[in-house]
Image (tube, protein in one colour):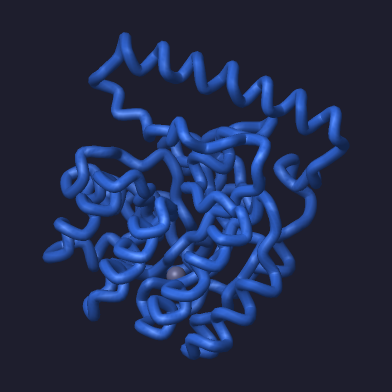
Length: 264
Ligand SMILES: [Zn+2]
């Protein structure tokens, strides 16, 4: 179930890679972010039917932020709900990349995640390597999962995370056609490998930095154990824990369908 395959090889060559930045550029971006936020709020008032993901108005674009992402759930053991509890206690949010086949019977936790300001996106229906499927199979993996998330939560995702981070031109082109940005990561908790709370804690606390997207798995109880420490500590260190949607809304490139993102 691990998602590690391309975490090191996939970090080059995308326009989203540009490392942030000079101080002046930061200011410019903050201004842009605010303008774009204002625009979004305007749009929301005039278009209630379009359930655009909400950007938390309490986020300060000038303070550091991190997007924690949790793959392979919803958990059968309650780990997803435990992570939601810790997030709520710390006024933090995260992105849950769920498997379509696990949604049935767990609609309540998906609905809760979205209702509490988190983001839920698809991680395919069956966790197959999408680059090995036919176009029709890829469309079904992405669309069926998005449909199930929408049915459970009332919000249709505009992003997805491919299993193993595996992406090629076909995946990009189908994602663009279906309206999904592709979300990978630049920090790997390696919880899928260690399945150990202390090791997960150490890996995350060592590698996080402003603007990163962290790969974790709510599939493991050890990850929920680690998050009980990680989430309060990152918050105490001044990091804002935000959704990927929020993180990318505070970047110069925003989230475009068919584009691959590893960080802000
Ligand atoms: Zn996965």
